[in-house]
Length: 363
Image (cartoon, rainbow, N blue to C red):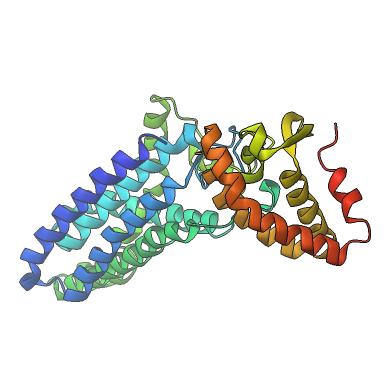
C-alpha cells in the first residue's frame, strides 16, 4: 500500500508532461476534445489517490468498524503486477495518442498489446470497485469514498477504445492510399488493409507478450497468476475470495463513559460494571443513557441503527480526546440536559423505568 500513492504521483506528473507536450502540438492533429479527456483523466488519478486514503487495509487485518479506513480493493502482495501493467498501459496510450501511425511498426504493435491488456484490466477494476459488501463489518460502515475509484478505469476504457479505433482508421486510410503495379500485390494490400493490420498483430502477440511480462514479474516475487490474485485475495469487494478477521471492539469509549471517570464528588459513581468484557466505572448518567438506547432499540431498531452509527462516528473520536478528570467533569455537566431528556422519555414510555435503569452494566 505504501508504494501505491508515490507511483500514482509519478504517473500523474508523467501524464502532465505528455499533456503539455500534446497541447503544444495541438495544431498538428490533436483535437481539443482529446486534450480535455486527457486532462480529466489526470484529475481522476487524484480522486483515485483520495479513495486509497480511506481504503488502506489488507484482508488479513482486523479493523475498527467505526474508523473511516476500510479494506483496499487490491491484494497487497500482488499489487506490483497491477501497477506495472497500469504503467505500461498509460505509457502506450500516451505514445499512440501523440505519435499514432508515425511510430515504428514493432513499437506500435507492442503499445497496442499493452492497450488491449489494459482494456481487460480496467474492466476488471471497474467491476471490482462497483460492488462493496459491508454487511460483515456491522452497521457502522458506509460505502464512503468508493465512487472515487470509478473515474480512472472508466476514462481508461474510453481512451483505450478511442485509440484503437484511431489506429484502425489510420491504417485503413494509409493502406488504401498505397497502390502497386502488380495486381496480386495490390489485391493483397486491399485485403490486409481491412483485415490484417497492426491491431490484428497486437491480438496475435497478446498471449506471448503477457506470458513474457508474467515471467519477468515472477523474478520479482510475483505469482504466475498474480493478475487474478490481485482481485481475489481481497475482502468485501466484487471478486473477493478472502474473509477478514473479526472486527475490533472499539473499546466502549463514549461520552457518558468517560464522563463517569471524573471527580467522584461531581460525577457520583455508583459501582463498577462490565461493557464489552471490560470493567468500567458506572454512574447514574451512564445507566440512564444506556437504558434510553435500549428503549430505542426495542421500539425502532432502524432508528437506533441510524442514531448509533452517527453517534459512534463523531462521539467516539471526541471521547478519545477526553483524557483528564477536568475534561470528564466538563463532559458530565454538558451531558446533564441530555440525561434529563432521556430520563423523562423513559418515564413516559417505560412501565418500570427505574428497573430498566438499575440493571444496566451489572457485573
